[in-house]
Each structure stands twice: as structure tokens, then as C-alpha cells.
Length: 480
Image (cartoon, rainbow, N blue to C red; front, side, top):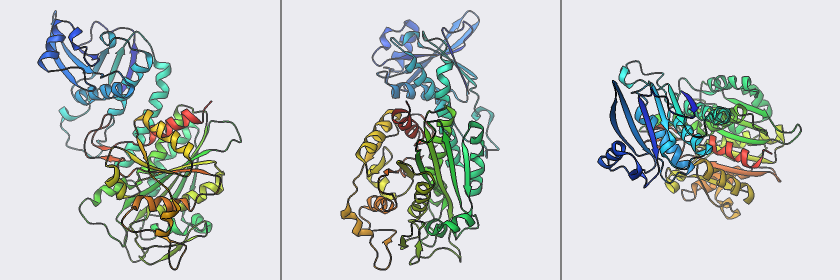
């Protein structure tokens, strides 16, 4: 979808939307004012009312869209709401900010960003989609006193591209997206200047990645470790490393999940998807920072060669793990990926993302992801970036008191603790693989990678959570 920025609406525009602040609907002209009154439209963010007008021989479709109090998130919601309303019914939408009061460039760009984000959808496998249900919206023309904002729009569009990549990866079916094809889907990042490195099963075995390989050994799909390096900062500066859990399908292994809902485990690679999307966003907008994305890619399946409950695996760090539940596999993938990333890049900051525990969904539902961190400054900065991007985070504790819950009688640790504190013990497990002096945060995004209903800037399905959060974190803390 093309978004254009102009100083005024063209006289030929036949579909025009007017952004309205909350409580200011009464200031509209007679026609629009009547439409607002009939629809009980008061300008709440994302609310829409519409009417029609005849101008000579031309019929115009006129819409009011609420921008609430005018915050960035309200404006994004408004842009998204218009796209959701018109995506399959018009080809070109004109938006006139003349009636919206005091509006600056950032407001207009936020509105456009919401529209762009909401436009994503995946129709690849729908062969009987009616013409009236197919996307038709091709162009949005935004008119405001700010005029042409195309130069600034480039960085916003790059971030939207990253979010779209994540959504596509998360939404693809598991027979199409598996470790090898995930790597293939990321090869285009080299066109943006990203350096790609891929480790295969043989290389990981030589490095001693017994935990990651243990998860993968029940599948016919071979595992991969993918590293995506963006060198936009000062040469020699240690990179920030993002690590993502990439379980492209999770049956639970021998500890088999219940059948109902198992199809949704295609999005158990949401952390890896977010990391790939974040790297695309950063490279696309030429971020002035050194950032590496590392994702461990496996499929967790039950067969005669699958890892068993009771097995002991040796991680790349040399620590041993007693596997009591093969459905607690994500931490086994992450621990080896974190260990490798530290040895390969010597980072000072690591942030991992994973759809790790159902316990996190019980704790926070689908409004926040959980954050665990060994560094208060890092936690504060990530939470702030979450607020800015509306990819919200809520902090949970780490404490040595929880460590005893994952101590094993015959190995260095167990891969699960008791039912209570399940998200915390998972984080405590990962913490054991973080080197001294490395600031580390673990983001449990289990409740955020997929949505069963429409959100502010996404439709039902893959949300793209994490991309904008990581992009903002880098922009606010690691770019000059």
C-alpha cells in the first residue's frame, strides 16, 4: 500500500476521511455534524462515522475518524481503524487533517503508521476468496499543513516492513515454515546490508549444543542456528544481541500437548520472528548501531528418536540438564543460542524473546509481555521502549530463592520446576547461561505473539509484537 503526503486534498477525491479529536465533533459543518450526531460519534480513538454527499455530478463518501486525545497511540489506532473499514471496498482514500486542530508532523506520521500496520494480511492459501473480500485499498493520500513527509516516512515504513515480516513468519503454516525455510525467508536481509551466518546440525554438534539438538532430534526437519548482523554503529563497538526462540512447531515432544489448540503451536517461533523483523527494521532505516539477531530454529516432534523425559543433555556451556518435560523445550533452545552468541560476539547486552510459558499468559493475559532482567537500567529502558511502541512490558522478579526449585539431584539443573512460579523458574534457568558482566533481559511474549481478536493496529492472528519494542530500545539507547 502506497502512502502519500500532500498539502491539500485534491478536488477529485471521492472518499475522504476527516480526523476529529475527542469532544470536538460539534465544531464540524452541518453535514458532518449531523453524521456525527446520528452515529453518536464523539471522536473516541478509532471510532468511525460516515455519510455521503453529492457535489455536482460526483458522489463523495465522507468519513469521520476519532483521534481521541491526539496521543501517538490514538492516532495510530485511528489510521488502523480506517484501513480496517475500507481495506476491501475502495482503491484510494484521502485523509484531510484540516479539521483536526493542532497537528504536527509526528501526529500525521503516527496516523499513517497505524494505517500501514493494519494493512497486513496473509491470503496466500485462500483460493476461493470472493472479489468483494479481496484487498482493494492501494493508496492513502494524507493532507496536512506539514505537506510532503516522504523523507521522514522512510524510517517508519522500514519498521512497518519489519513488523510485516514477523507477522508473515508467525502466520505461515508449519509445513511451509520450518528451520530451513525460516533461514531462506531471511536471506533477503542481505540486500539491506545484513550479514548472515547459518550453523547446521553438524556444526552445532561440534560446538556441543546438546540442549538445542536434543529438542530437534525427534523431527525429520534439521535444526539451524541463524545469526543476522547489522553493523550500523562504530566499528569495533560491541553489538547488542537479540536472541529468539524459534520452535517452528511444538507438539510438546514425548510430553505431548493436548490435541485441541495444538495447531496454534506454529507460532511458537514468535520470538525468532520478532528478532528477524527487528533486524529488518533496523537495517531498513539504517540504524546507527551494531545489532545482532540470533535465533535457534528447531521443530519439537515425538518419534522413536525423540528426547525422553528423564534424559540428561549437556549444553554448550558444559552445564547439564535433566529433562523432566520435553514440552519445556524453549529454554533448551535458548540456553545454547545465548551461550553461542556470547562466545561469537562478546556483547555487553543480550535481550531474548520467547513464547516461553503458558504461566505468563495466566499472569498477564494478552495485554503485557513479561520481562525478567539482571540489570535494572536495562529493564527500565526496555519498559520505556515498550510504552513508546505500545508493545508493553511488565517486570517480574529474579531471585536466588527460586533457584532451588530447578536444582536436580543428578544433574546441574532440571528443565522445569513446580507448577507455581513457572515463568520465573524458566527465567532463572536461562539466567544460569548468562556470563558475568552481561546485562540481560528475558521477554516472555507467550501472550502477545498471536491474538484471537483484532488489536489496535493489527487484525486477528499474528501481531508482530516485539519488533517496534526492540527498534525503539535501540533508537532511544544505542544511537547517537
